[in-house]
Amino acid sequence: KQEVTQIPAALSVPEGENLVLNCSFTDSAIYNLQWFRQDPGKGLTSLLLIQSSQREQTSGRLNASLDKSSGRSTLYIAASQPGDSATYLCAVTSGSRLTFGEGTQLTVNP
Amino acid sequence: DAGVIQSPRHEVTEMGQEVTLRCKPISGHDYLFWYRQTMMRGLELLIYFNNNVPIDDSGMPEDRFSAKMPNASFSTLKIQPSEPRDSAVYFCASSSTLTETQYFGPGTRLLVL
Image (cartoon, helix red, strand yellow):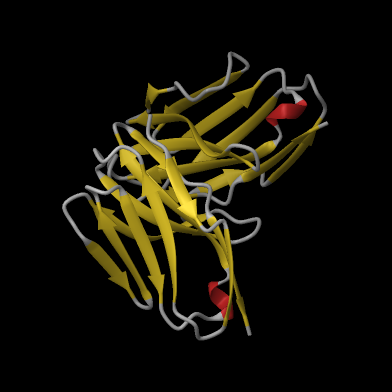
């Protein structure tokens, strides 16, 4: 059974700082890995999707990497802003399922 | 497209009552997913459909839960009878293929008293 773990569970940083969120998964037989953002009381918004054959994806200030063999992914956020405050969820597609991690709650302080 | 639409956004009911949650996926998406989110268990897949056919319902917690997709633009998740432990946020999501990005609705926040 696939298990996804995210570290840290919570992170508080000052505005402008670069930061890294970590995700690990137990079964490397995945189709893809996705990073989502969830704002309080809202649904999930897809940020980046990395196919299993890819190593990284970039969108604006966000960069996600994937090391399938070691079962790890990182989400790098450059020059963080207060508007980046949210919960970030990592999810992997394996078999026919999308399995989510518990999320990292990020707070960016002005 | 308006995105995935869910209704109601909030539902408060009493134990034993029937609850019906509704979802309209993005037009053209062949896959529809129902998830449940709680503090204790995080986000869990309950069931998903492909071309209106249920493919994997192994996440449905028990017989009190049922889901249908009568056509490509509408799905329901029903809980009968509801219990306090069913209190959670229920999300619907859709995608064009099984391995492409899933687009989530805003969720239905259910409270069973």
